[in-house]
Amino acid sequence: MAASARRGAPLTLEEIGSTALRLVDEGGIEGLSMRKLAAELDVNPMSLYHHVESKEALLGLICHGAAEGMALPPDDGSPWEHQLRELALAYHRHVKAHPAMWAYLHNHPEAIADREMPIWQALYRVLRLAGVPESELWRTGDVLHAFVSGFVMAETLGHLPGDGREIERDFDTAIRLMTHGLSGLSG
Image (cartoon, rainbow, N blue to C red; front, side):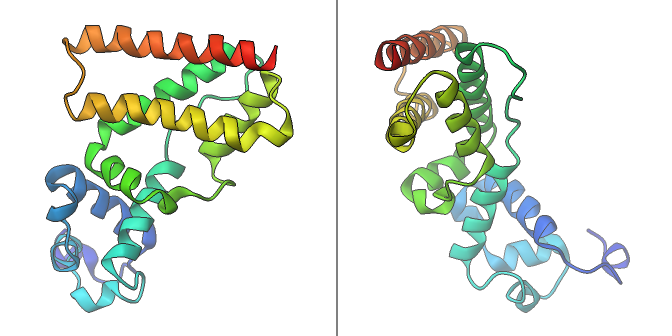
């Protein structure tokens, strides 16, 4: 960003987070530093510390912002199986768009552990539609999250055989297994 464009424009957390996420997408977590981010934003590195106290806090901001920005399926009255499928596909697309950030996130799950976040609330809504009792929402949600996350991480790390189409078919199978398993659990 040019200095003239920066002049007079206050630095925002959204701008910091989106620029940091872009840097992570381009160079991985190790490619992100407060100095590099400050250079991208055309600010003094110390000005970043008025908004985020450390690189760890910055990474938490990135993870939280990315999770908050995920395109989630609406509550459109469609069957829960369809809504669960759409939620899993949205998660899958987002992980593939930001693999380095999600790899970091899965080693630091506390970054999005807030159960009030839209992704968790969407999952709990779908689980309620599927008939999962309130007392089992967190457990069932955690298991489904681990299941989808494990698949996506295996894909991201290259542990799944086949080309993109084959992996898409595998993911579709995983989603069908989840919906059939959830039907059996709540039925």
